[in-house]
Length: 155
Figure 1 (cartoon, rainbow, N blue to C red):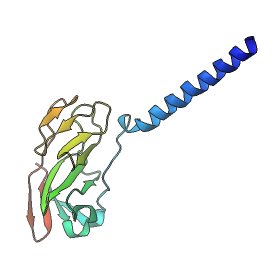
Figure 2 (cartoon, helix red, strand yellow):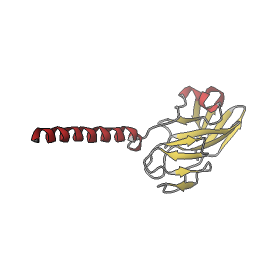
Figure 3 (cartoon, rainbow, N blue to C red):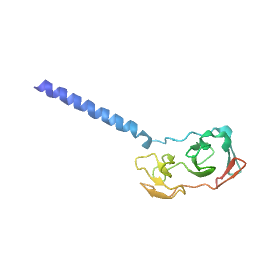
Figure 4 (cartoon, helix red, strand yellow):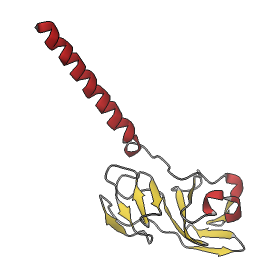
């Protein structure tokens, strides 16, 4: 009888361990900065005079409504997320949640930006905090588009 109970105990511990590993794997993005959008290649943009100039035609993810891409550059204070919200309509925000600095992703189906962390902060397309654990609004960048070049003011 003791051996049978010991086997049940071992099976139970293995099941708990596998469940814990699964939960961790599913939620690992809440522990680190995990980009959901592809990075924009450095040959598709230039940084000059406190401005970021992006060749939109060279970024495939920005060619379709619902697409998004991220600029990651050591010269920038924060990663910048660009979302194509409609036909040649974009939003440009900091890709860092105001709660725990985790990655923000664009959810086109819901028309929001959302945090990848367990707190799941949600922001409207103007960067205003709507729900979750957000501790303020997203940093929203002003930009202009001229001849398929997006110029983002970095302040």
